[in-house]
Amino acid sequence: MTNVTANGIQIEYDTFGDPSSQPLLLIMGLGEQMIGWDEELCKQLASRDLYVIRFDNRDTGLSSKIDEAGVPNVVEVFAALMKGEKANIPYTLDDMADDAIGLLDALNIEKSHLLGVSLGGMIGQIMAIRYPSRVWSLISMASITGNPEIPMGKPELFVELVNPPPTDREAYIENRVDLVRTLAGSKYPIDEQRTRQHFERSYDRGYYPPGTARHGVAGAVNTDRTQALKSVTAPTLVIHGSEDPLFPVEQGKATVDAVPGAELLIIEGMGHWFPSAVWPLLVDAIDKHIRNTMSAVGQLR
Image (tube, rainbow, N blue to C red; front, side, top):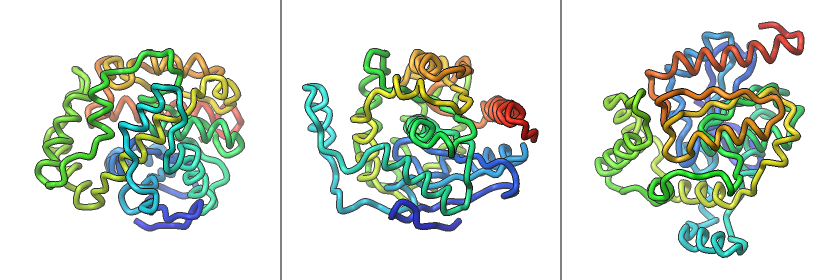
């Protein structure tokens, strides 16, 4: 693993596969480190002739921490939004999209495929809107458009996600494993041992609750992208679980409706988590989407 200066901060990243292959940038969600993209999953994607890049978003893992911004009062921010007032936040999802573009610049990658999950899907959408010449294709997974008219999931899950988890290592691990159990769907239950090991490593590598709060408010105040998504020219695949308790499947359908020509893959029985049992399906779908994209522009893989 290594880091580069991008958009004025340090971004930690690593890669899998041949740099001459088609680049695929993986964008993780709220408060999660790049290791949320499991190494074995990255290798499976790289085996499809892809150059896979994963990275720590700002305020996670080993990338720069925006400590000078302080910890936002999540309750006050949400209260302001409910009243239709402007909320003061440390940075926006646009800033995080600029981070990702800066990483591509630092790696001398002119154009990339994007795969973003949850908050990472929102960041990927913004990149496709603002930087169309830098995006070969977009894969938006378990994400939303920001349209306030589309139903959201259980409010208590949002509270659990943005509230600081326990500081004690064992309590943190138990808390996160319990949360993932709630997020997972009925057909793809979590691998308890793998999930526990993931959060053990996450705690030891870069436990940083303030970053989760700052991510949370950045996502909360992001405006409705529905109209802007109509300008997206990158071939788009939307992947959504039929049992997502955080962002119901209607959110995925709304994304497809917004992006011209977008395709929808609903994974029956999947929630807001993608355990190892669903990886073969995901890898096949991503590979097919990217192959179709490159074939359409005359660059067969």
